[in-house]
Amino acid sequence: MSPAALLAGLLTAPPAPASLVDVAQALPDAVVQLRYAGDDNFLKRRLYPERARCLLRRDAAEKLALAARTLKAQGFRLLLYDCYRPPSIQQEMWSAFPRRGYVADPARGGSVHGRGGAVDVGLVALDGSAVPLPTPHDFFGRAAWHGAAGIPPAAARNRERLLAAMEAAGFKRNRMEWWHYEVLGSAQWPRVEVTLEAEPR
Image 1: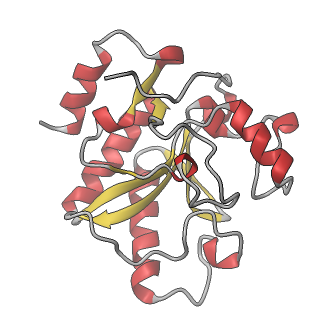
Image 2: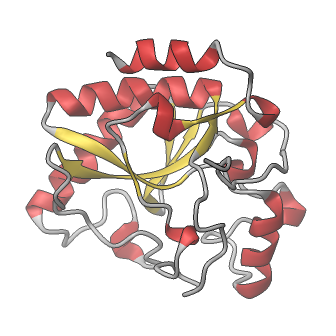
C-alpha cells in the first residue's frame, strides 16, 4: 500500500491529540530511532518515554511521505531521529544546554518540534543498513552545517540527496544541522503539550 493510502486510512481514524499523527503508522517503511527515548543524545540521558511515538502534524506527515517516496525510488529509507517534542522537554534541554543556535530558547518561541512541524531525519539503505552521513545526529560543530567542506564524498552526496527530497516536499533546512527540517510556515503553528507515550497494547 502506498504511503498516501496508508496516511489516508490513518487520518480517517479518530484524531490524535492536537491533530498529531503517528508517523510510524503513516510511513511503515521509515526506521524510527528516537534518540531522546534513550541515552544516545547530546545530554546522554533519556528524555522521552521508552515507548515514545514519532508524532507530527498531519501536513508535516503528508510532506514527509512525499519525501520518503522520492528517496525510496533512489534506494533509501528515512531514518527518524526526532519528531514532535513536548515544550516541557524543550525547556529541560534549554536548562541543561542554553546555547542558542543549537537548542531553541523556549522564551523566544521555542522549537518548531513543539509545534509538530519539525523532524530530524537521516537515511538508511532499503535493507535498513547504515549509509554514510556527514556527522552523528546532534553533532554541534561546523561539519554538521549544510555545505560544510571536508565531508567524505559519499556522505556529502547523501546529505544533498536528503536535502533535495525534503525541500521538494515542502520543508526548509536548518543551515547548522543537516538532519533538521521544518515545514514552511510551521513556526506560526501553536505549541502543544501532549504525551509521547504509546497506547497500551
